[in-house]
Image 1 (tube, rainbow, N blue to C red):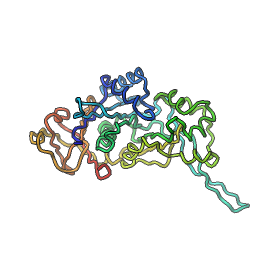
Image 2: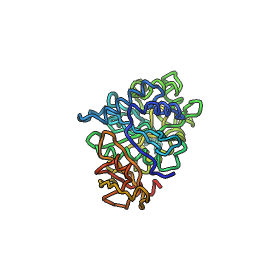
Image 3: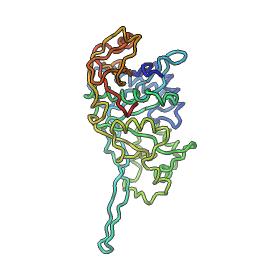
Image 4: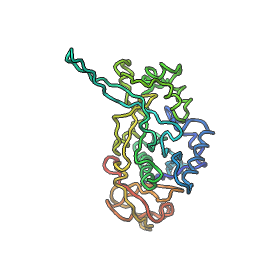
Length: 349
């Protein structure tokens, strides 16, 4: 499958049907994209306003993107989504559990114990948050997920004054096909007489603060939890493995935070330290009639526009460190002038 067939672009109200289809199709649900047409329409309207706004960023912006397969049978088709929340917990604090080790020592027994604890915190409040990742399974083994995830980082780099210099992303934790979640059953359900799927429906992409604030704020001693709940801490649901692996390759840290509902890993990093950001450079997009018929050589790059409104990105081959990139005529019309590009690197091959 030729990677040049994929187009990453800003989402808009016209993508509502595609977002509804994806929200209904995702195996365990995308918490930031609930299967509610009215909510999705509001989110897309907010996103379109964020892309178009000439005002300074307030931090409440969300940016939603889609990935199109321009050569899908029957014509161009949206096959994936991803997003960015400019500031996590803008209206409410953004809660997580922080992994810590507590040392207990008895001088009389000359013995020490290191005990794993979870501390409810809102350390990540104000971080920029990557959200809403979904890719149709048929495209999982292509370069499409790389474009869908990494192009967001070039958008953040290009418009860095609108985002935090710290970034985070939540990943889904373990839950079975019936919605049973070992971590929630051992912790959250003790204080809320609700199953995990009920809690996810109630939050529906909103802040989790209203539930977190009713949770006990004292540390949770992990050895007191059941074996299944202990094992689930920091573990991924299988549907999260692909986007998680891309984030790890980027350089996100995985050890410190977990989700307050399902115990899935919440990763974080400094934006400036991420591979796509460090590798990115500006270049001149050159419309080349040769590119219409002759494929370029060199490593694959994410090539992104430098205009916020109508932001787009594609995958193209280019020489390492090149200051220009040759584009076919159709792509050049979408990415005129200066572009920002970053080599995918070996981890994305």
